[in-house]
Image (cartoon, rainbow, N blue to C red):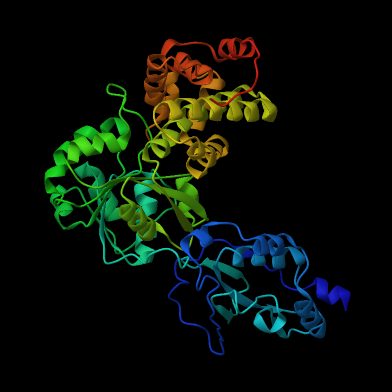
Length: 478
């Protein structure tokens, strides 16, 4: 029997729902139960870890009732599968459970509410189908407002604009993507694909255009333009945006000439209106595959924060709120510079020890300049700070890290930039950040090294030598 049990079809977990699964009719004989875990819980409770959830998620053994039921069925699913599913349930996840077929008896068995694996009081929906997978489909937390009828205009045609259109499409939110370039919008509208994000197909219902007049009907405008071009782009488009319509920036950088952050540029270009930033560890290639991600919506306007959270919360994206707009924007801008340094370390083959040290000291530099410019220190150690920094520095797809890696391997700056389709925001940001730091009398050794490598031709090996021979003092953050 043990041998037969070992031959059970493999249970696999998929953190993203398939594109066609959310609205697909249930198979004949499907059963479902519903009881929201988050009922009666406040938004604060939902955002905090639950000790019971943490304990249950970390346990590798199923509850006693579940074990008894599995034994009566003479088989048990892998403990790791149970653990992972329970962990997902602890953060409010809808789970579709598929039938598992025994190799010996060919009889179908399903691990669901009857087996005790899923507590009906904590699961949202359990549906049995015969497609061979357990699909995890996160539900919207009860503390998150459901988006009202919106028409979102995405200004830009880069990777993040493309993947955000997918999130909005799943939410059923009317969306228009407005490219600043007519030729790009025509190709995008016809092919529904972009060389910026291979393998990704635009939602069928997404309207693509270069006509700025389409902004007139928007209830929410998203700026997906690189920082250095926001001013010129929105100076031309702002007249079409209706008064009072909020603008949300997803750009990460600092304007070189003025040292302004994206939301400051938008405030000047678009006039008096609510402004917010949406940031966090979001590698576009992973969002395109609908892998889980967490973001932060930041604004001085609490209502706008909640609105942005509601609009961009999806089955694979969770959005937190913050009132530290400056801190969130600075974290997103500065991490790109540290990511270039991390890439240089990769290209030079310096190893994991050196890269980890670089990230730790890089985070200290980000917090140091960030607090000096008005950000909150806790922001830099949260999702928008440490989270985004880690993702950017380790993800193979990160364009700032990849650019730095080419420099570490000996490529010239011009050649390394020419091989990158998207804008490497860390390059201009390094110059702006170093200038800002000198103005405030703040030392940023790693950022200064990146600036010297990119703009002054400093050899990466010499930059490493200079960093290593700096006097060792007491470790500090500020």
